[in-house]
Length: 80
View (cartoon, rainbow, N blue to C red):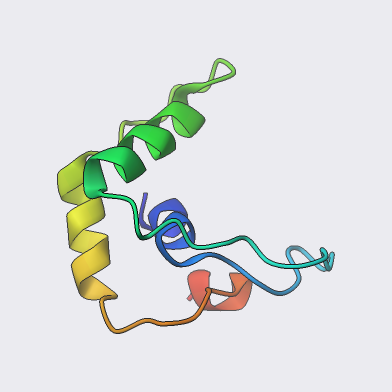
């Protein structure tokens, strides 16, 4: 849950699994926790996936833990 929440809150840059894409995934952190949780839950449950929901409380916790972050994440950072 934290991985995808961090990406939506701060964006992502750099190669992903060795593939470099043009540009970066933009941060959506200006949206409120309810919006973020709704988008992430939709993505995680769509297309016959059965992943758990992400609550606005989950988003709030990740946002608070990373409140000083100002740049997009890299795959390497997220895998630590």
